[in-house]
Each structure stands twice: as C-alpha cells, then as structure tokens.
Amino acid sequence: MGLFQTAGAKLAYEISGDGPTFVQLHGLTSCASREQRAGLDMTLSLADCRVLRYDARGHGSSIGRAVPEDYLWPRLAEDLLDLLDEVAPGQKVHAAGPSMGAATLLYAALQDPQRFSTLTLLVPPTAWETRAGQADTYQRSAALVEDQGIGAFVRVGRQVLPPPALADRPKERVPAVSQELLPSIFRGAGISDLPTPEQIAALEVPTLILAWVDDYAHPVSTAEELHRLIPRSELQIAETPEELDSWPRRVANFIAAHPA
Image (tube, rainbow, N blue to C red):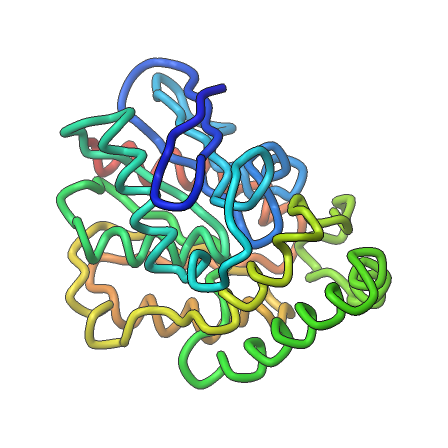
C-alpha cells in the first residue's frame, strides 16, 4: 500500500493487476476494503485491468483533518485527480463508486472529462430537492457523535432496515473513520450537493448508473434524473440480492463496450 500526499491529507492506495486502469471508490464512512462485503466492488468480473483502490481522506487508512470543508465533494474530486496524476499520468481510466464515490466521480469528470473512458455511478445519493432532509440527518449525526460518541451513532444505525438488495449481506455498523474526524466528515457531506443539472447535462463520458430500491439516502429518483440528464447513460435498478450480484458483470460488459 502506498501513501499519497495531497492538500491537507494523505491518501492510502493500492494497485493490482495490469492493463487499462480501473478506479474503485467507496462511500461515506466506508473504505476500500469494505466494498466487496457490501456488494459494491465492481472489479469482481474484470479481466486484464490495473485496479486502483484508495481510501478517501479521513477514511480507512487515509489521513485527514477535522475541517468540514475538507470533505466537500469537489475537494474529494480534486484528491482523485491529483492521485491519478501521480499513479496513472496521462492515462484515461474507467471508474466506479457508490454514493459519495459517485458524487466524487461526477465532479472529477466535469473538471477533467478527458480523464475518464467510463463512469459507473452506484447508488447515487440524495441531490437537489431531496438533499435538505439528508443534510439535516448528517448535521444531527455529527452532533450525536460529539455528544455521545460513535457507539451512540452505531446504535441508532441498527434501527434502520437495509434496502432489499442488501438483505443477505452483513451490515457494516461501525464507521471506518475515527471519532475525532467523523463529525467533520458528516458536516462536509451535509453541505455538499451534486453538480447542477445544467452542468451534468454537459457530461459526455459514457455512464452506467446502478441503483437499488427502498433506500431514503440513495433514492431511485436521483438515479433516474441522472439518466435523463446524461446523454450517454444507461440505468439499471436492483430490487433483489441476485440483481445486485449481477452488477460486476454488467460493469465488465459496459467497460468492454467502451475501451480506453
């Protein structure tokens, strides 16, 4: 595993395999090593790819600061582009990420669209009209962790039923984030939103959008609107664990249709 110094953070990353570069991102409070257990590792059906995994700042083995603005989605996109300049200079890459990772990819692709051969946006988060309620949840979660610790946050999380597509998977309850940084990470997420619809409509990168049903933090409405806005996009919605299991194969086929 390597460490990459970026503004205000050190990113832990690892690279395996040979071939076109595929970047696997993760979601809020998760880390690279957890994505396979959550059914969100899109590398499982890939062949002949160079896979880059990394932990976002403040997550997993990466280092960050207790500064909410450090965790804004455009800042995370800058981290990704800086890391790619280091480990894949001048290369076009394929990339996939859930929730916060999907938001990171959208901002990165708008900033540098020539960097990406394809994007796979997994379970896109609340955005625009649906963002305010989720932002309030993040602010309350930050206050809960500060007042009562991570244990209290984990206990509240146990009361939330998972989406049907995750029914057969173990739920990761404990954040892959330190108690010191978690409030700032929540607040950064709470003041973030996706790019404007007008910005997204200008995106020309081939995009696969994969969503699941019955998840208030990742509503199908966001995925459907992204599909409507992005000219070269495809959408699939999972309702069962079996449909979720098909996602890595779907991603591999999508990448094969859009080589670097």
